[in-house]
Image 1 (cartoon, rainbow, N blue to C red):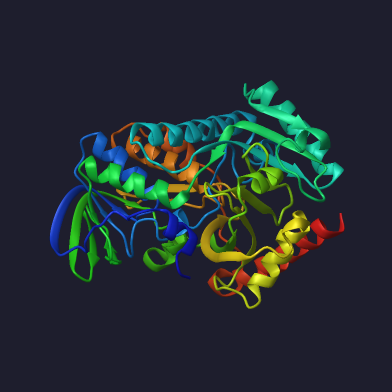
Image 2 (image 1 turned 120 degrees about the horizontal axis):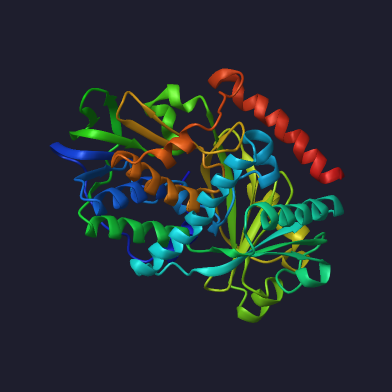
Amino acid sequence: MDPSPYYVATAGAAPLFGPLAGAVSADVAVVGGGYAGLSSALELAERGYRVVLVEARSVGWGASGRNGGQVLNGLNKGPAAVEALVGRPLSRILWDFTVEATELVRQRIVRHQIPCDWRNGFVLAATRPAQQRALAEEIELVESHYDYDQMALLDRRALADHVVGRHLVGGLYDAGCGHLHPLKYAFGLARAAAAAGVAIYDGSPVTAVVPGRRTTLRTAGGSVVADHVVLATNAEMARLRPDLARTIMPVATFVLATEVLGEPRAAQLLPSDACVSDANFVLNYFRRSADHRLLFGGGAAYSGRRPLGLEKVMRARLARTFPALATVRIDALWGGVVDITMNRLPDFGLRDGNIYYLQGFSGHGIALATMAGRLVAEAVAGTAERFDVMAGLPHRAFPGGTALRTPLLVLGMLWYRLRDLLS
């Protein structure tokens, strides 16, 4: 799928790099020019390492330049569900990592003067009373056991201070989160990494990874030999390391940009300018843009392709939440592929002694991928405790292998979608 036409048009000039030509050497080679790869490269260069980053297309081309722009604490699963998987002590550590991750995004924006339209605030909106009760329990849990005091429960009246939408009965407001222009943020990270001394090569897909005491990356135009390698290709991992890709599933999701609504009309829909997601399993997410559009995301395609009739489907999802926008003009509609894991926890690890991998962000990639770069840089520098916590999370391969995992997941997601509609 092509990059987001709206983000490309509004991101400003892209940083220009060239393809790899010839043989180069580095302390660390990073594969992938998204948030995880750029953050890894920046953190490593700031620690004094010689870093080369190779990107198959251009920086921010993948999910990092197409996503909904929401920068969130927590993981894809709520704290109670994470506790059920790994226990409270580890769940608390993971929560603290994610809070640090959102703060790291803010720090990067300020330190490197990245003009990416940052706005504060996130609302997780309930569409039925059972969800509202679960959100109240989540707030009590994080306040009592995670020492986090940035959340507030919203009844229907209080919710209207943040979002005015149909079928929303309440919600949770988190002042510690926010939203931004994702491609501007990716461009800013790339410029910061280059200024720190990272050699960035785009248009340079890696054709082979040859493990060894010093690992070799091969491209059509050259090669990189490095002491350490960071694979940050996410949904594209199967092309390089099929053994690692067994634990992730590529899923396409879609976002539309309405016509310019004007500030008064946009503010009627989202008065506080917070970003919003509903609490359904098959969810919708939306926010105001800096030029006063509504950016609305949702839906999924497990083939990785743009489905037929996508605009009609997305328009119906938009109108269900915002009936006043039923006939609004849609100026752009795009999709991108994210990688999810079976348990929706991120999947980090080390293979062959010096090849680190970062994947499975499961829809929380802006903050988590930024934080992943810090953790992998710590590990390369010899302080691997925090990376090892993430690498120790339990993961299973998707059932059915590469041939059957997609249809099996489709059946499961259809069940969850039916549950959302009927409950």
